[in-house]
Length: 292
Length: 215
Image 1 (cartoon, chains in turn orange, brown):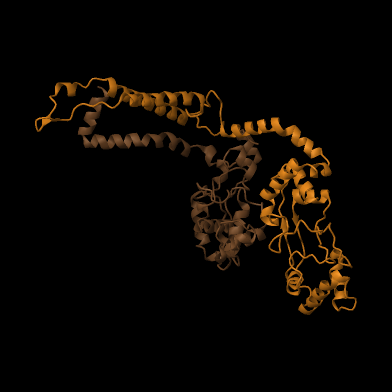
Image 2 (tube, rainbow over the protein chains, first blue to last red):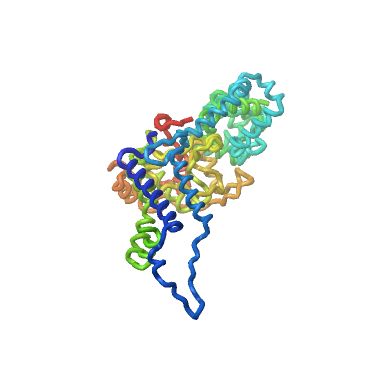
C-alpha cells in the first residue's frame, strides 16, 4: 500500500502507540491494585469532629471498561491497518472495500445486466420493472436539465417528449447523444449579415412552419445563408444538429425577438457526455425510455 | 513507584502537571499528524492534477466567499453507493493545490467533487441565478449578483499567484504576468462556472490503479 507510512515514521508510530498502551495499562492497574504507602502512613485528616474525606475508590466496572478498551484496541491494531506500515491480518483498505463491493455487485447482477444490454428495445419497454429503473436513472441524471417529466426547461434544454429530435430520435442516435454529448453550432450572424437582413430572415423563418411565404423578402436570403444546414424547406439536418424549422416547435422560443436573437448571437447549446458516467446497462435503459 | 504516588507527586507540583498535560495531549498529534506531514505520497499531485489557472482560482475564491462549502462537500467517500452516485472516490493527490481544501463536512446539497463536465455551462448559469428555474424542488438560494460583478475585482490575482508560487505551486512567470489579462471581461459568474467545470477532473486512472482498489 503506497499510502501507509514506511521506514522511520512507521517505527515511530509503532513505538509511541505500543508504549502508550502499556503505560496506560500500568497506570490503570496500579491505581486500582497498587498500594499507596504515602496514604497508609498518613493519618487521615478529620474536620469538625466527623468530617473525613474517606477513601472511595472508583467503581471496579470502570477498571474493566478501561482495560477492555485497551484489549479491544490491541486486537483492532492486529486486524486492521494502524501500526505503521502493517496492513493488518484482514488486509483491509478503503479502496479494497469499494472494489470488493463492486465484486459482489458484479457477481450478483452482471448476468442480469448483460442480458438487458442484449435485449430488444421493445422487450425492455414492455417490462414494467426495467422501465421503472430507467425512470429512476432519468430522474437522477437527466431531469435536472430536461425536467422531471422530460418536457424541457428554461427554453434551453430540449423537450424529449415531442416529435422533434435535433440530433435524431433513432435509438442509435439517442445513444450517441448520451455517450458522446452534443454541441450545437449555430453561428452568430451579426458580423456577417446586416441587422435589416437578419430581420428579414427572422420574419421568413417564422413563416416556414406554414410552408414558407414565397414572396417574403427573407426567402432568398434564407436560401443563400441558412439552407445549407437547415434545408431549403427548413427540414433541418440531424447530422449537424440543425433543428427543423418547418414545424412549430422551438427550443429557444419562436417569437420574432428570440429568433432574431438566435440569428444575431448564435446558439451553442451543449449536451454533456455521459459515456464515462453511466455504464452500458444504464445507457441502454435510458435509450429504451427516450425512444419510446 | 505506582500510579497513585505518581499522581500525588504530579498534583503537588504545578510545573510537572503542566508538562504532563502538554506531553500527553501531544501524543495524538505526534502519532497521527507528524508522520502524515512527511508522507510524500499524500503531497504528490495525481497525474492529471495541475495548479488552478487564474480564472479557476478566482472562481474558487468566489466559491469560498459565498460559503458553498457549508452545504456542498467536495469529497466522494470510498463507498459503493457514493461511487455509483457521484463517480470515482476522491484521492489525496487531487487536493495538493487546494489551499485550503474545500472538503466540507455537511451535505445539504449534493457533493460537488465530480461535478465538472456533468452539466453545461449554460445550465450552471441559470442554476446559479435562480436554482428553481431548472430544479423546481431545490432549496438552494440564488446568487444573481455574481453576474453583475467583475471577476477582476475579487482580490489581486497577481499577488495570489505569487504567494501560491512561494508555497510551491509551479506557476510560470508567464502565467503570473498574464493573470490579470486572463480575468479581463469575465464576471464572477464566469469564473465560478469555469471552476465548477474543472472540479474533479484531476483524477488519474493510472495513479488510482497504483494505489490499489480502483474501480
